[in-house]
Image 1: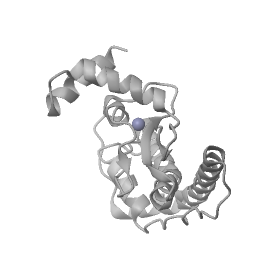
Image 2 (image 1 turned 180 degrees about the vertical axis):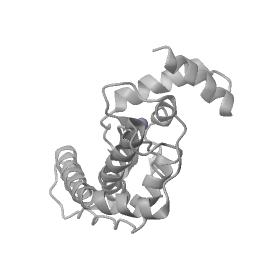
Image 3 (image 1 turned 120 degrees about the vertical axis):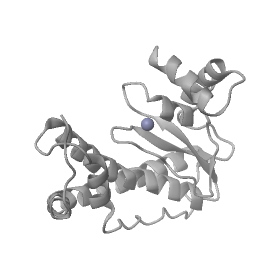
Length: 201
Ligand SMILES: [Zn+2]
């Protein structure tokens, strides 16, 4: 069904209604991911030095409103697809706090070389995410972005100097698949070829 786009007042009301829950969930995601990073680091490095996990990033005032506006564009309020879009944006914004702290910690940590993208969902990743996963631990400290769509369950996996990373096996699998599917081709053509093999799985 064709929809319409929310007006600014509707966006503001919807944002106001869900912002408290998103803010609480962001805090929780931050704390859980910080704990995950701390534990993994201690386990791999076997040291309890004084590395401090970076503070939670501030959540820009308009970020949620912009996310809601973008994700609900041309969807009819009251329809299931509209509700799914809003929920998806809220979940993505909450999860971003966990993603950010892993990236920030890996960037600040002298023992880390960066991070790799890893898919954590039960269903296979979309072709675009799989392409990013197939690049492996190349996302270094210089603040590479982390593209995430609604429903995306990819996470950054920190990479510590001299150690493997969680998701190494997944990376090799998609790397080989990418090579097989795209052999010799680059750019959009390569991604289209890869998309087709991903759709067959
Ligand atoms: Zn993904």
